[in-house]
Length: 124
Image 1 (tube, rainbow, N blue to C red):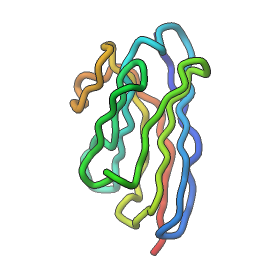
Image 2: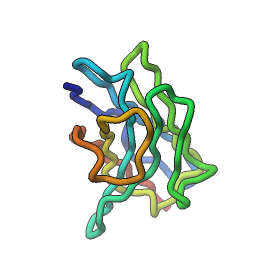
Image 3: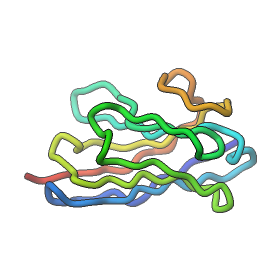
Image 4: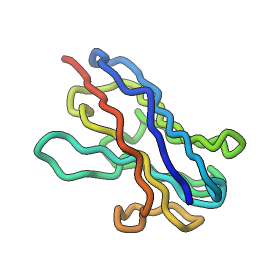
């Protein structure tokens, strides 16, 4: 079973960039879809981006399209989220998650493994 640990969060000014990493341990990482979700205070958790098992197909929430890029390195058991042109509304706890399927999923219920999250704060 896959276990996930996020890193790379922090405080950044609006317009800046951050790169989040999610390191996976356990068996099966290279065959599962991965996703990044975020939850801001007082709001529901929402999908940010998702990627299929090989990295060949991705999906983004409209709010981050053109600014964020999800990628994965199966040799390193790691998935990344490159975040550019950050806005104050991107402030949230970011979680990575794994879904027991090859193809990506937009639906939170399809993910059965979650990391503890990393805080991203964007100041105006």
